[in-house]
Length: 87
Image (cartoon, rainbow, N blue to C red):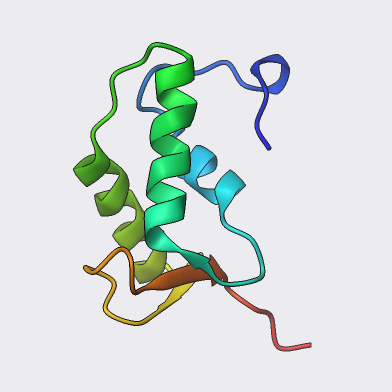
């Protein structure tokens, strides 16, 4: 989890890093990840939009940093996880 001690950020600069801190190797609902990121920003009194978070999640999927299953636009019925390496 990202803490104040290890993250100095401008409001939107480290969004990818914050999203990735809530994505694990096991599947997590997209709604959970979006909500967790929103709360992270709200706790710091920084304005953030859920649609902006979703755009970054889609970009992370496109760049193969995370993978998804289900209809990614249906946040309650889709899931994401860190891309699994072929070991």
